[in-house]
Image (tube, rainbow over all chains, first blue to last red; front, side, top):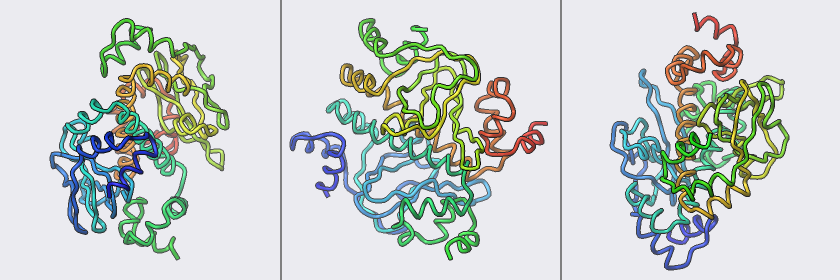
Length: 187
Length: 187
């Protein structure tokens, strides 16, 4: 697990053994079972999570109790309710396991300590944040420019493995379409 | 103009006069006229822009030549085609003035020089990138959870000044609705 994590960071910045030990000391390891919640709506958001293995969904429940999936997070992804995490506000979204999931947890206090203690970790997080921002912009574009069928095809092309790992109901909640529409698209 | 820019940065990190001079030396100043393009689709994207005054639109044209507005950028905002800027790929979006606009321009080479030369600027850009990422997530949520009327109301509440400054056709292209639907909503 340390190897996976180190490799992930070293894709952006090289680390000595000592530096990696320093980085790693800021994280705690947690194992969650399928269907378990890492964050519930209205929780105080304690951690950002690096997914070592498994699969999570970040979900928003609207006023009519309908659930919408903001994102899936699998191996090598960082996920949390970032607004609540950075602003210290209550969670507006929930984060739940679709599969048994192993994560590395980073509190906001430790995030700041880590960035102060090893400046190049700011470069690492900046790279990650820029990539996240770009991915979000692409998703906004897909809502503006694509119909349900096209969004389905884009997702299939980008993340083929999701179609094996995620129940149809959840794919529909991610694409913003009904379960019935999804069934028509996928045959 | 230097005052506005310095104040903007010092909301995140304090700077000495010397440090600010160093930061500022990485930017060039440009004035653009209403309707002028800062970036055209397929351009090589040279710069990220800090808007000193004025108003820009970041726009995507789909295969059927329909235009979709990804974002508006006004005073105090950073804007560019971030994917093309960071990855060195060609622009997939255009950036154009809705009003006469003054910007400070930062090339990617100068962005890296600036971050290496003054490490705390990485903290500044990290903060900005995180905020941008959060704003994009909120917009994704609004597409998933809200109908045209609700998205219109959210925009009106968040950026009332846009409704004075932006023609209705462009507001419709941002909300992902037709000009006719927008007219029904706004009366």
